[in-house]
Length: 343
Image 1: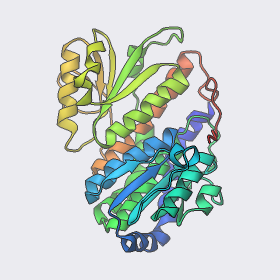
Image 2: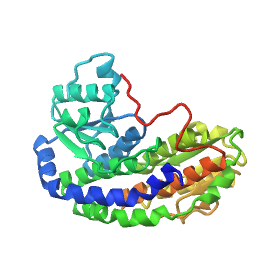
Image 3: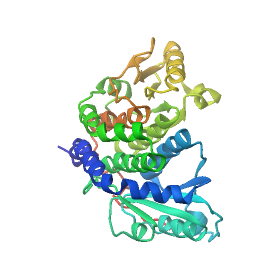
Image 4: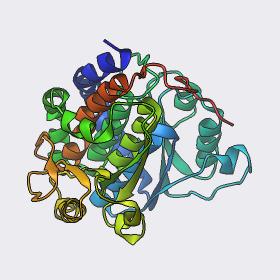
């Protein structure tokens, strides 16, 4: 068993650990954010952590109506720009909490007036120590180079904060029940998609991954994992944005993974997936509403946000298996290491 596969299997337990650890501090964290009374929110992250931030962007905008923007870390670490962030929140996400540019950007955000909230898997890290509120995502040691359980717990931590901040009992209840749904998701099999991607690592090609809203953030993460573990070129697009140009590359047999949750965007994703499939593309979709695209199994969690997050778990299982079938070691991606520290 690869380290990556082992850590995928640990996702439900890691999520349960985080839910239980967060409960005693939920009220205090929620009160602190309400006292700040933010007018907007910013995020700081790179890599898989940035994809977690993208998920939280959609979740926060959908649930509060407040705008969320990603801050480029080089604004502080390279350009040394002073920021004006009064009456705002700033979420920083980093598995290690050690990258100098992320730490510098959070410092700048705090100096600019933002209430800073860090989410790391390393209590006592520079990022955690320098934040106003430090959330330990409680994923446990993650040795695999490709982030899996830390990605899920980073998103989950942000959603727990959102539920506590907004007094959203429905979301909080869904998050408390999420670990059991993730347990079901671990066993979901997406091998039907693997056949469309090829098992020869010398085989060239590309694929698109589409979503909308929170599932677009999942698509970003999935595209990265295809690149770093399978040496496959993958690009993530909004199901709507795809039709504004990138669709011109989609010919017969072109592989497309369409990620749909049980939310208001499902119908539009299905429509795009069926259109592409009708034109001859090899389309696989996480919906039972598609007529032309191939259906992938999914877990219905009962809430749109947890529905979207649960999709990444069977995907991780697919990409780990596909890497091995292509003769690659997902624990040793080419030219990558676990912790990347950039300035």
